[in-house]
Image (cartoon, rainbow, N blue to C red):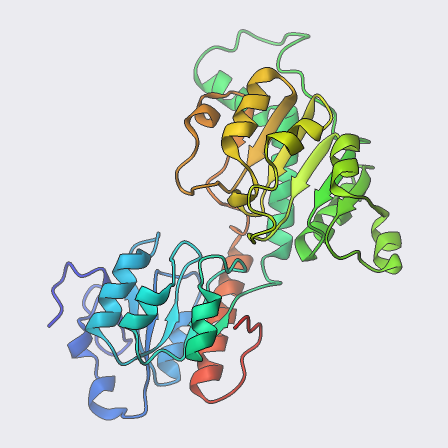
Length: 356
């Protein structure tokens, strides 16, 4: 019998106790010999997880919004070595220790588009399928990138803090002046789905759009989005606002270091909704304090969830808690993709969005 304080439960519509059921109480254990055990790191939005039980699988699900975490997943896998599938959050590291604890794993279906939490080399070596959830979060993340651009430039959060602190003394001609967004030059670093979606939104603000990416898009896409391809150095030098949409790879880790940040136009703004490891936060804080950069808007962090103390102390930085994909359709869509991948693999089929 699993004690009530365990950070996971078996999802079972037939037998429940306040929504939490001990694993040994699941009636599927008695009659479904063909079922597989699936671990889901955290409660997910929507009804996707219920599809797993409908398909005849046994679900063990974490009850904390932040997920089971690396060590928690290892503990659950050791308690349930027959587990066939794992749905981790992007904050859950899946490495050799996790895979050692799950000798029966057939698929790791990452809940998110980022895969830097997965040891893909080890997954491939062991023949374990890995998938992610691209596409469904494109619009939500692009919306949020524009929100950060507007907030960082127009001091929305900063003004909110001023009012709430009782420090606002009324309208002033010089209060919280920021750079104009409409008609400015936007440099997009990383021109995949999300970068292109941001470019489409920028057109509504009459922005000149520049982009840099290891792979240049087709002339038709450039024409449709009115986007100009430049080297990274030229883009940084010409942009009023730089928006990062890079994956976390060896080549992008520390991409925006002090040297590159200094290449940005004086008084420009940096926004990052890509991966936190792309920006050296100490260097960013230094250039913001110096006044070389006017502002920054960050949704991801170098050592997330830890944030460099100097950034926390700066008034001209908007700090968001990784909200890029946080609209309901996106998060529900991510759950549907993860669950669909698990169901496909456990049925002997090829999943969509395979990364290993």
